[in-house]
Every structure is written in C-alpha cells, then in structure tokens.
Length: 403
Image (cartoon, rainbow, N blue to C red; front, side, top):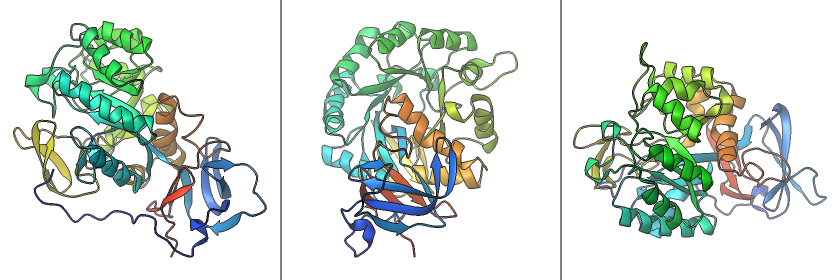
C-alpha cells in the first residue's frame, strides 16, 4: 500500500439524478459516432434493454441524445495488477474489488487479474481467492506472470523466487485457478518451457511468451508448440538485431500471435508502436495497461509482490535497481493517446482495446463490440476522446457527462 496517496482525479461514479440514463427503462443512445466491426456509423444509435444491446427499440424506450460523441465497446484488459491503491497480487477481496472498480471508472468493463512472481504456495492460494471473484463475474480470469520467467529479463520480479517452467508446477497453478486461469507468461526457452506450452494449450489456457531471453529460432519453436500471445512486446525481451532478430521479429511476423502493447508514453516509443501495428496489423494487437496499484490513484511508495516500487510523476520504478515496474495506465488514457498522439484510426484502436482481447478470452460472442445480443458494455467519449460515460451490463458505472 502507498505511504501517501496522490490526488490524481478519476471519473465520477454513477449517482442518482433525474437524467433519463438512470432509469431502468430501455434506452436509446442516439446521434453518436458508433464504432462497429463493420466500420463507423455517423449519427448512429445503440439500443439497451436490460443487460444487453438489442436491435429493435421497445415502445417504452427513453432516448438520450449523445450527438457529437463516440460510442465504443467497453475496454477489455488482459494484463492488470491493480489500481486505486489496491493490489490484485496481494490484496484482500475488498482490495481486489476496489481495483476492479477503479478501472471500470476508466472504461475497462472486463478485466483479467495478473499476479507477479511469488512462492508457489502463495500463488496457488492467490489463485483460489481470485478464482472466486471470477466465478461471481467480477473478473474475467487470472493471468500468471511469473515465476516461470528468465532471470536475464526479470523486470520487476524477484529473482530469488523465479523457477523453470516445470509442467507439473504450471499444472498446479492452473488447477488452483479452478477453471479461471486464462493466461500464463513463460520464458519458453527455459527447460520445460515447450512442454508447459503444450500443457497450457491442452487445458485451454493461453501460453504467452514474455520476460524471455529467447532467440528468434527458439521463439518460432514456442509458437509452433502453441504459444499465441506476446507479453508486453518489446519490454523484457531482447531487442531487434540485424543478425540476431530475437523474439520480437518472430512474434510480429506470425499470424497466430497477438502482441500486447503498453501505450503509456513510457514503455514504448511511438515508432515502436507504429512498427507493431504496421507488421501485426490492428487485428493482432491487444492494448493493455500492465497497471499496478498506483493506477487511478497517485504517486508514492507501493509494494509489487515482495519488491518496493516508487511511483513518481506517474512512472513506476523499483526502488532497488530502477527497473520499470508495471504502469499507472488506465485504458481510457491508452485509447486517447493512440488516437490523438499516435494518429491510429479509431476503429483500429477499438479492435486492439476491445475486440481482440475479447476474442482471446473466448468471449467475443458476449463482449468486445456493440452488436445486438451482446452485453451492454460501452464507453462514451467526447469529440476529444475524453471519457464521458461508462456502462457495464446495462448499468451506468459513470453517468453520461454531456454538459
């Protein structure tokens, strides 16, 4: 927990008001630029009835004019360690719920909780706690980042607690998650790495390559074994070389791989982001936060697993060694930066921040786009791409701010 809280603001949560959006009646959101899988509909509308989006407006539907705004699907974060001063890696159930709510205020309506390297007994216990929240629908699942990673590329993980990816140990974590394990990050070049990839694929869990010192050839081998995600591409892995292209080239070129990107202005140079979108194209990119406790909260001292982190001016670094230790990013900021700074097309950003991660989770039939029959998870943005409203399952988490 922080030694002193920051004063960074967040979008206001829903409150009671005479606004028609607070009614339980069916609602028509009308006049926005609606981003659909088929393209942008100008002056479009989204109809919400109960928890779902519907294709036809009931007779008793109320109308909310959101002309001049954007309506996009709720954001889906595959890689997140906490927020609001609360940790998914070590906090109580209430802490985890606080962190989830913090990110919902910033548009993330679906979230996978990520762990960090720890003792196996601690991680299996942690998996049990997080799986309960997944079973009741608060989380979309669990991502184990560590301990099966390279000491050469450990980043903000305790080297003393790292271990090789023995399939038996990997299986322990998957079993402890009781069906809620969604992804495991591995340094697949380590002994047991490829067998662990195959085990994860067999159990329907995403095998992600990350915190790795693998060569190009070793990375290709891991992809062929079934790995399908690059954990925060470019970060915690060898960089591109003209004679030794390393994992980045292998991950970018393979159509089977989705690459995570942290677009906070700290983890990646804009040219690196452009390179990834150019080579992987928008349908193979997943924008993530890799957030830690300080996201949506403020500067100060925090713990990330057993390691102490100093957050200064929104950048998290280990107190000892100075390595970047996750981010303080929220996905509304990643969305705005991607469109306004990196000049990416809005529909490409929507694919990377909603549709693609939903597809990886196997949930695209329920979330990830604004199509009839799916959950009414949506984000309202103004013309400058600032967040002005968040709806989850048909209920406003952040009421529309249209003034």
